[in-house]
Length: 197
Length: 197
Image 1 (tube, one colour):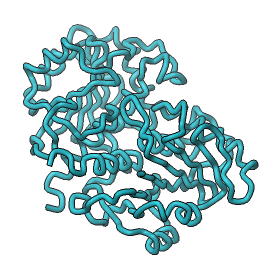
Image 2 (cartoon, each protein chain N blue to C red; image 1 turned 90 degrees about the vertical axis):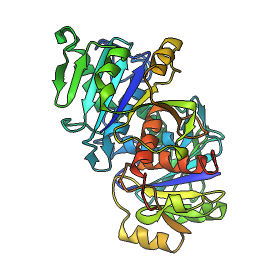
Image 3 (tube, rainbow over the protein chains, first blue to last red; image 1 turned 180 degrees about the vertical axis):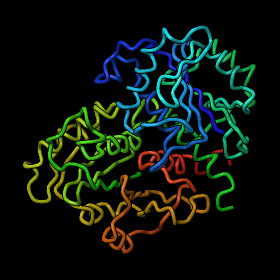
C-alpha cells in the first residue's frame, strides 16, 4: 500500500466555507482537494491500494481509503464537498475514534504525531524535502508513507517531530512543485520502478 | 521552451457554461483547466519558458504563454474563468489571427493541424502514448512539444495526422494517468534530466 500524509496549515477545521472560494476563504482547500485526487485517481479508475490523510491544523485528520471510496470525481469542487461533509460530522468523532462520513472517507480528531503513530507500522516514512536524496538514487520501499506539506514549508516543530520518525528524506527533482504535483510524481516514481529495465 | 498541446474533445467552444459545473455541463473543462496549471505553475511561481495550447473541438485553440501570463491561480475555477473569457471573444478572432483575451492568453480559430503547423518548427513533437517508448530510455529534446489528449483517446483521424508529424511516441509509465498528471510527470522527466547524475 502507498500512503500520503498532507499537512494543511491554513485549511478550515469546520464546515463553514463556500465551495465557490476554495482558494481564498477556504484556506487553500483547492490544493488539498487536488492532493486527494492526485493520490487516488488514475485514468478511468481509482488506485485501490492507496490512502491519503489530510492533517488539518494539527488537530483533525480526514482520511480517504482507495479501496472503499465511492463517488470521487477528479474535479476540486466535488472533492472539497466530501471534505466539508466530513467536517460537518466533527462533533460526532468522539475521543480518538474515527467517524465514517462517506464511503471510504473518515474523520478523526488526531494531529500529525498521533496520525503517523497509527500508520507508521505500515511502511517506511519518506519526507518530501527539496534538500533530500534524489529519488533517482533511491529504491522505493514496498509500502511507502509519503509526508508532505501544503503551500507552506514544514514548521520547525513538524520538522523536529518528523526527524525522529522518517526513514528518509527524498527530493523529486530540482524544481519546487506543488504538493499535488509532488504526489503525482511520487506515484510515477514507484509505478516506474523496474519499468522497461 | 517546452510546449504542451492538449486536445479537448468535449469542451465548449462558446462561453455559455457555468463555473459551478465544470466537470459536467462544461465538457470536462475542469480537466483542461488543470492541464493549464500543471503546465505553467510550479511552487510559488510560473514556468516562464512554457506554453500550453488547448485545441477545442478541432476548431478553436486557446494558448497560454508562461512569460506573459498574469493572475493565473492554481485552482480550476479561476483558470476556467480565463478560458471562458477567451471564448467570449471568439467572434473577434478574424481569420487565422489570434486575439489576446488576457495577458498571456490568446484565442485563434485554428484546429489541431494548423496549430501544430505553427509550432512544429519550435522543437520535436512527442506524442504521449501508453504503447510508446518508456521515457527512461529517451533523452528529452531541447525544446519538446508534447501532444496529449483529454479524457478520451486520440481519434483515428488525429492519430493518423500525428503519425506524420511526431518525432516520437513516449510512455511515461505503466499506469494510465490523467492528462494533467501526465503533464506534471513530463515536466519532471525533463526537469530531472541530468539531475544528481
